[in-house]
Image (cartoon, rainbow, N blue to C red):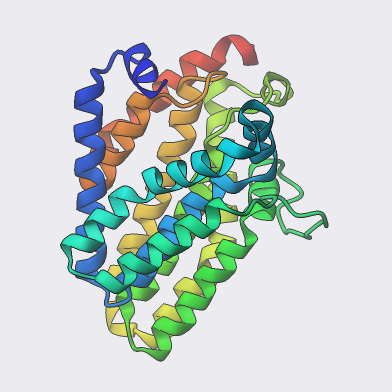
Length: 295
C-alpha cells in the first residue's frame, strides 16, 4: 500500500525510502549531538508513535478481521516493525539498556489498547478561530504539558539544548494540526479571496502557536540570556515550518498531503533554507487550488 502511494505521487519507492532513511538518521544524529537527554527523548518519541497503533477502534477492527488468535501476533509484529529504526540506531550507539527497554515496552503496548481521545471537554483559548487549534490542542494537551515539563528540567539541569528541543516539540505538535483537510464547507464559508484566506490562516496559526510557545521562550530567555539570538532563530524557524504546513496542506486541498510534500518537508528539516523557495511555491499552488472554491 505504501509503495502504491509513492507511485501515485510519481515517486520511485526506492528513492522515497532512501530520502526518508536519510532524514531519520540525520535527525537522530542531530538529537544525540545536541543533548545528553537524547536517549530518553528518543524512547518517548518512539513510544508516542507506536502507541497510536493501540487505539481501541483500530484494535477492534483487527480483531474482527483476524480473530483473537492472530491479533496479538499481528500487533506485536506491527509494533516491532515501527520500532526497528529506533532500535537499530540505539544499538549502533551501543545504548543497550534503552534498546532493551524499548523492545519490552513495544511488546507490552501490543498487548493493550486504549482510546486516543478524551471524554471531557478541555477549555482552550482558541475557540474564536476554529478549528485546527481547538481540536488539535484537546487531542495533544498532554504532549504540550510534557514539553513544559522538559523546559523545567532544562532549566534545572542548565541544559539550553533540551529547552530548545522542548520548544521545537511544541512547534512539531502544532504542525500535526494541519495534516488533515477539513470539509470543503469550512473553507467555502470564508468570504475572502484565496490569498486573504491563506494569510488569515497563517495569522491565526502564528498567533495561537505563540500562546503555546511563548511561556517556554520566556523561561529560556530569562535563564539563558546569552543564548537569546539562538532562541529567536529557532523560534522563527518553527514559525516558518508552520507556514509551510499550511500552504502545503491547501496546495493539494481537498486531498490529503501527499508523499512528495512529506519528502520535501524532510528535506527542509535537513536544510531549512529550502523553505525560502518552498513556501512561495506552495502558496501560489494553494491560491490556484482555492480560487474556484472561494469565488
